[in-house]
Length: 239
Image (cartoon, rainbow, N blue to C red; front, side):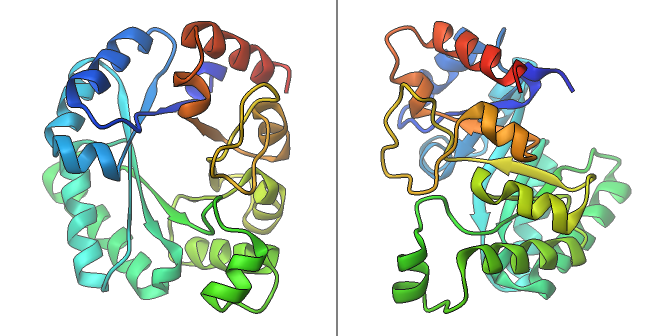
């Protein structure tokens, strides 16, 4: 995989036209664009089609978390949109993840469409150890919880997980080389961490085992976003 294919640009914006303008501006540098809750709620499924028309892939970041049947049907709908990957909350449990994975595979085989990569979200990068313990009620360590959820996603047959770079090596050691790790919360040394609690630089995330890194504000808020992408790509290359 080429270095530029490892960088996913998050389209965390509230305007459809602006989102597509970003795709047009950066498609020479970025292969995969992330569509999250805000943009998908505003633009609807057509945003995926428009990005695909421009020859680029979509990471649909909606973090499905519901009863198994509902998540399964949402997953099949995402597959029919032609997304490259989508995610579900691993905390939804083994049955939810497995049913989603099995039904998506069956639908793709039956309808002759490409199967998207399905990822399990472990612990959001905005959550600290204290929040996990005191608010969510998980008493064991953050690393233990990420390891448990990653193992559960692997057991369910998912393609990988979304996890902080700080836990990437842990996940890689527990789940093996073929298991995808997509890492958000990436910040360079010259960008603010914003609301992220567990951040890591692009170079370090790849060294720790991440396959893909997701960046949005850290690029889009720069005076020259293309220069930022070039600097980030060079840093990733050094890993």
